[in-house]
Image (cartoon, rainbow, N blue to C red):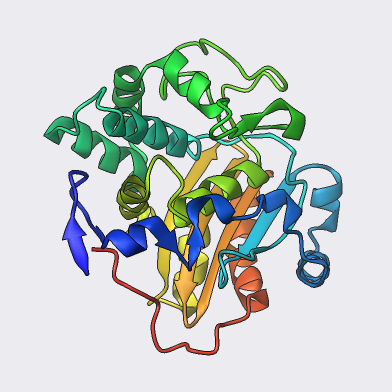
Length: 302
């Protein structure tokens, strides 16, 4: 059964909201404890075949992948997952989270201007829209939320994570992250956690998670992961946020097609980074096994 919510999207009925994949919301494992040796070996081999081992060694590339065919038992692999990178527009997903937390808590209405700004911030990566949402949410509120015990999407014990310490556009940073002094930063592990929490209904609430996921769907900027995957799998569902600034290239997504269901996050610091990510997503897709029933990608987004 489907129903509409105050977030403006169609979501699963009550059973689907309270239980995703048959597990209670509190029963999912911590992602960093879900590393799978066979998948790690396959990823390492792929990076070697792509001649990206040196980039990994020089901390110019970080990757985290998570097989989500069974969300209660994710299979994770990665390189440099706790290495924080400047990530340009990718951390706009943190502003999205903070906005929906404010909305859920009754502290901010989801009015038409806010909805337009959220969609523009995510789908076309509008800097003015991101800054307007950031100011409505509150700078200190956002950073407190990211470091809260509930989410710990920025965790100093795990190398940092998602951070927004500067409006998008001109102007100085108001608070750089404590570990690396970045204004807009991320680690692949923490971004993968964001998507894992989102996909299992644990960001804000199950209904809010689905509303945020809808915002991440149908990306309008077709480069990096989207460009790479669409060449061979134009029917694939991609829920995604990327980032680009000078030699910094970032992409992150939940991907579903032909029985495959996985998270992939990559951060790079190299002029060739966009090409790396375009090729990397196809190689990672090749590593991902498909569920036995490949007749459907699951329920529609809307």
